[in-house]
Amino acid sequence: MKLKTTQSGAETVEFAIILPILLIILFGIMEYGIVLYDKAVITNASREGARSGIAYKCPVLSEAQIRAAVIRATSLTGGGTSLLFSFASGATAPTITITPTPPTTTTNCFTNSGTPLTVTVTYSYRFLALGKLMSLFVPGFTNPIMLSSTTVMNYE
Image (spheres, rainbow, N blue to C red):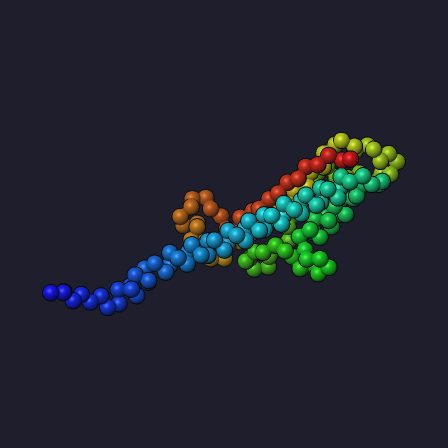
């Protein structure tokens, strides 16, 4: 003889228990994917700025021209729309630091040859869904987080 067991609604209860965990994993994958994308964009931008700054030209590019190269690398071509994503209200532009300040003299174009040029790009990323949740479980976690990329190249 077969016993009849009824489990009416058990699937619904199990789904209700598992759904928040699945959503946290899904949002975590999406947000950390965006963080990695933003890190790749600022890494490319710092590399573009350093490369444009060290390329042999007489006179060398000014600090403003190197900054413009970095901004171009973080924007869509011809548009000015930023390639960087952040969920902060009023997302900020990246901070660009160039050391040492490029000279503007044209008398001797080889004075910088062999010396390093450092371009650092820093960007503040604010999490949308996981920021408060992460601060509860990870000690020292801050929202927004600072993404930074530094490129050092020698003048040609």
